Amino acid sequence: MQRLDDEQVERILAMVDASAAAVAPDERDDSFDDYADLMRTERILPGTESHPVDDSAAGLADALIFLGMGLTFLGHVAFTVLNVATNMAIERGVENAVTYLRKKFRKDEIVDHVMEELTLPPEVDPSEMRTVIVIQVTVLLDGDDAE
Amino acid sequence: MTEAAQLRHLRFTDRALRAVIAAPYALFVPTLMTVDHYGDSPMHLAGELLLALGAVTVICLAIFAFLIREWAAWSYEYRHGRQLRSPINWDHRWDDVRQPLEQSGLDIDTIAAYSVYRTHFNLKTLHPPGRSLGMLGVMSDWGERHNRKLIVTGAISGVAIAVAGEVWPGWYDRPQFWIGAGVVTAVLMPFAIWNGWSQYRMNAHRPESVVLIPSQWRSRLRGDAPTATAVFLHEVSHVRHHDVSRRRIVAMYAHFAQFGAFLDAGMAFTVRGSDGLLFALFLIMAVSGILAVRRARTALRLVEELRADAEACRDEPTRKAMHHFLDGLATPTPQTALRSRVLTTPWKLSFLFPAHRAIALMTVGNAVPLLTLFTLLWTGAVSPAPDL
Image (spheres, rainbow over the protein chains, first blue to last red):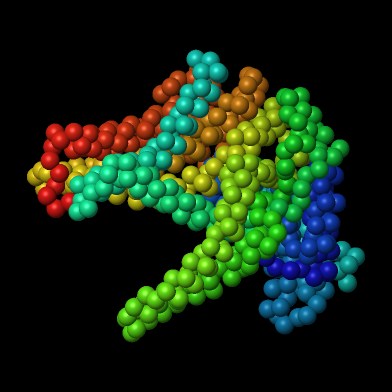
């Protein structure tokens, strides 16, 4: 679990908001405010908290279920996008990652890097995933707060 | 067979499986009595019985002390971890989930539920154990925070005492030491009893379970009333029967019951007979007892799940919804396959075969041989082992 700074929180939220509007509109309308509140107050990516394995818990099924492209999953993707983009810039010794990326790379290149980095659950359709990442990278590079 | 028959079978099987786990403790009484009676210094029969019962009680209480430590650890974990931070207040945003549940006769406000953000999840019921009130609770948390240091200190003290016993033999064998030890015990005992009693009431007698709901269920199950009802009522059944808190207790006692079954198998060596034959009997009794306890522990969970399914799915739409839900899992297991089959076919007693096998194994492989040996020995039909 990693503490996020204000800038990271707002960027991830903008990316999640835009991609959720495309792939999970119902959940966005229903829960985005709660999700954003939690992230702003606790400065962590929801769903990445360490949680102990309690053997006595009575689960509905003795297997984990992928919950689909909801806010939590989109948050994880946005976090990866941000990490990959930052790493791409840092590797070249640049401080302001977003400005650098905007000048030097095509969006497709960044999307390819993110696709390589993510381990996709089998239930996720790669082409849909690509759409989500394109939306998020677009938000990251074109967003107002990216200056 | 009818739904009532199904629930009755599940209830009986549940009791029988708990008896399988309790059996090694109960059978330790005749084993101890035999060892006492045919040993070097036999006592009066009533004395032997009382001594054996007392020993088993002390063993059970000692295991209960382990259980209290485990409760303290999980209580601390759940209070300080971040898992249980968003209690669901069932406000208007939950209406779509709330309505079908209330229509099925559930008083939703009585169920404690928390929502969590996860990418992969499972609806589940947890038992965050309660903490004793006042100073005892504070001390229990302190013990949990310094658990490792306390264990290391205990181990070092143990070694130090052993060394002291070698260097200064009999250092403790003087009145001051025993009076001191007696005073400390007399002072601590009321606190231990009070803590044990309140822990028993809070975490075993009336435990509080909570349901953990992934935040996404709200939008996911909107408009799918049968599935929302079936899966939630399944968890509510676990809450109502205190299944989760019981699983902790069963796990702890089953853990030590395996060793108990091994000790009970030693009953084979209390009679006179050929070594090979007695050793074979010992092996059969030990292996059957240990396996039966392990299988009973697993089968108990199956029985709890089947009961939760049966209580949650009382009409055709919910049964169908649960069946589709279980069949749609990405990684089906034998347990989910069986549950799915039970939902779509008429109830048969043979569904409980894994449970009945565990019960039979304990009865035939361990309890009957032990009690037969006990009867034969005490009626004088066979003679005791010479070196008992």
